[in-house]
Structure formats: C-alpha cells, structure tokens
Image (tube, rainbow over all chains, first blue to last red; front, top):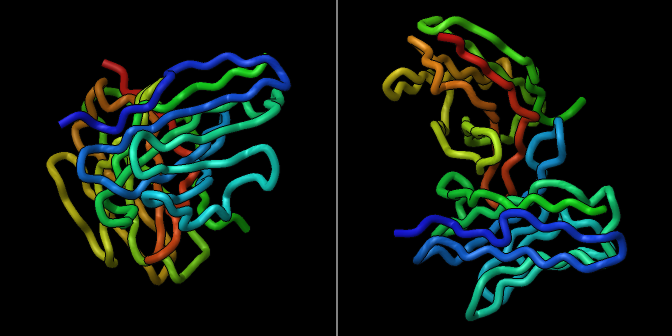
Length: 114
Length: 110
C-alpha cells in the first residue's frame, strides 16, 4: 500500500511563474490536508479538502493560492505569480475519515523561487 | 501568546540518555495531542497520540499530557543515534486542523 505521494519533490520557479504541487492520497483516503513549512517554523495549516469540496481554507493566503481535489486524480495546490516568500516545503497529508489523528504525511515538495 | 510553544533547541545528548521534549499550549479546547518525528528532508511521521491527561507508553517512548497545566511531554529512553531528528508536537480539536509547534531538533551522539 503506497503512502501519500507528492510530486515533484523539488520545484524551482522564477518569480511571477506558476507552481503546481500534486498530492495523491493513500488508497482509500478521501480527505487531504495541505501544510506549509518555512525554515525555522513549524507546520502551518493551509487547507483541508474532501473529494470535490473545500472544507476549511482558513490557512490559505487570500490571493494567488488555490487548491482542489477533483473526483478523479490528485489534489493540486496551485500558486500563481510566485514570490520569493513562497519558497518553503509544502506537505500534504491524507486520512480516511477526516480525523487529523489518522493523517499520514507525504515527503513534501520543496519549492524554491528564484 | 502563541497557541503552541516549543523550544527549538538544538538538544544534544549522548547515546543512552533519557530525553525530555516539551510543549505548552494556551487553548484549553484542545482534545488530542500528538508527537511527530521528522528526519531531514522527509515528511513528519506520527509517533504517538493521546486524547486525555496521563501517560501513554510505546516502547522507548512515553507521551505525557497534563491538561491542567496545558503541558505535554515526550520522553525517549535509551536514546539512539537513529533518534536524531526534529520532534514536532501537535494538538487539535474536532473539526479543526492540527496546530503544530515549531519543533525541537535532537542530536544523539554515539
């Protein structure tokens, strides 16, 4: 049973470009959480999604960031017009029932904006 | 005051030592408490979770929660070099996302 798969593992973007981060949850998991980890900072919650629904996006910046979890395919975190401050590790976690206690994390995508 | 406070360390101990890692929190509504281990360049891995005050033991690891003091601890007995990692505390309540501490970096030397 494969774990949570995130790709790419590393992503380099120039300022102003778009970044797309993908997360395939564990088999049987229909709940996905996205977190951002800045250097010397803890994990910060961004958004919680179920299939085709955004449940909680209280941690998402109001502009340039969006997330989706379609009926088919991976969850996508999209950052438009990236800036240097977006450089961070982005982690996805999935759970079967929407309980954080059962969430398993992926290996993360390290975004570098140059 | 931040919701979750965790001393970032770094903490350096010799192999075999007992390690104590701690977090304090301010939100009395938190219902469950977790500890994650994160190796460099890897995703967080759940070590232990508990819903109530008291102790929970799993091998060399013991998690302790004191809700009255809003204080949680993770003890590692007989620490090994392979325990060298960053340890993150996290806590939450039903219907909301987990709140993480900043993490404590532990180094165990052989």
